[in-house]
Structure formats: structure tokens, C-alpha cells
Image (cartoon, rainbow, N blue to C red):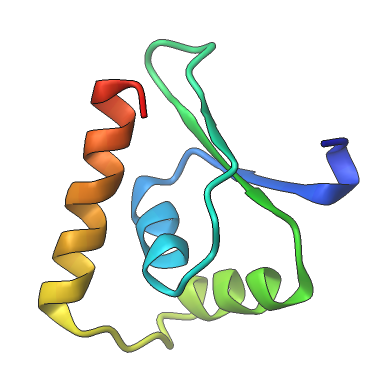
Length: 80
């Protein structure tokens, strides 16, 4: 993927929110051992979701959000 077709973030809560709303995680860049980057295919819908996240305008079901968090932690620390 080139720069225009990817969206990456090192903000873990944003990555959880995007994952929770069904955006596919393309990979995790662990080049910097102190700050991993979550890589998603870039779409207009993803931009809109990220914007709503920063505006604090998203509503989530708490248990499902927690499960999305556990899934990302597993991918981050288990190499998935």
C-alpha cells in the first residue's frame, strides 16, 4: 500500500474505535518499540469515523468496545 491508500495511527483508543466500527486492520508497524502504528486501508468512511472520534461524537456499546480493545492488545503483543 502506498501513502495515499493507508491511514495509520499510533493512538491506541482511536485504533480500537476504528476496529470496533468494522474497519479492517491491515497491519501493525512495530518499527518504533515505544509506539506502534496501526495501519488501516484509507477510505472516506474511515476519515469520517476518525473525525467523529476526535469530536467525541461516537457512541459505543461498552462490552463490545472492551472486547475490541482486548482483540487489539492481543494482536499487538502476540504478533497477530
